Image (cartoon, rainbow, N blue to C red; front, side):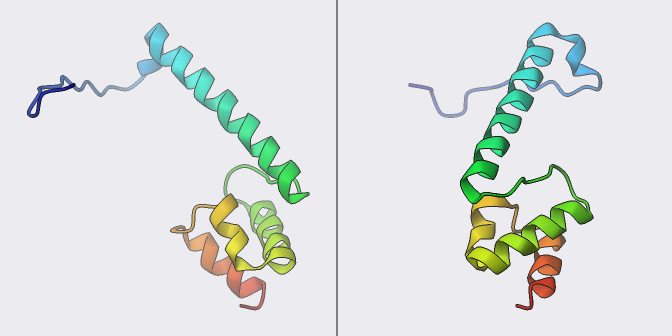
Length: 92
């Protein structure tokens, strides 16, 4: 069990991937993201594109029209402005 008030030395720097452990963690995190995005795409029956683009918005509108706005809580970051655009485009 950790003691309260424990000091942690947090180091932030650019090009942290120069550190082998950071590079490995980055690769593993990206692989897991891509794996889960593929699985989620299979679950909803539609390829979910990465990032923020018109393709992302188009896919989100299709999902909302098919499953309702609650589907966004499973596949999107709701605090982004894109969510409002998608709901408006879907007629909600």
